[in-house]
Image (tube, rainbow, N blue to C red):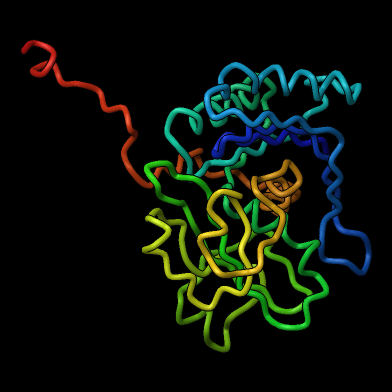
Length: 254
């Protein structure tokens, strides 16, 4: 199945086409192949470049819109204006094509993209992901995986379960939240990924994954897509009110 994936939760405006196929015999991981992708790093250009990037991906791949079988969109956390551009665009493509649109946490997609760097790790791994929340703050989440296990399709589990006998691979154990870097306790995190301008606030080995990729986005929704599950409504993870607040009629009249 050809899947369109988009994310505008970070300054990187991301679009791509990904081929998603069921797992091979003897494997539990679906086959995910990036056909083509486009990334523009510009926090003010989401609205101008996202749709042209999608159309460029289709042209380069020789595919048509009718070939798209599902859409995946990063739902944040992210700044209000940029985030809603990606989600609205994904919803519009899904509606026009009559296909399902799946929302995934953008931090989860970054975690999924770190798998190739951790697959041969001998010990359990706890990953901290941080992205720019502006106002000198970061969005963050923590993940846990057992040796040779994936962060793909993370499920939220309680802190008690994460540290007890029921702890299992692929789990988001805390977050997403927003705070100042100085107020963020990395806990038992052993590695970090995310915004290059923020990972250095923490004394942790840095994995070279800064933003969600189309493959990471699709990986987080793979089981739902392949099973034909009805997606949840797209709900943005803003985590706080937008910087620009509408004035009331009383204020305007003063």
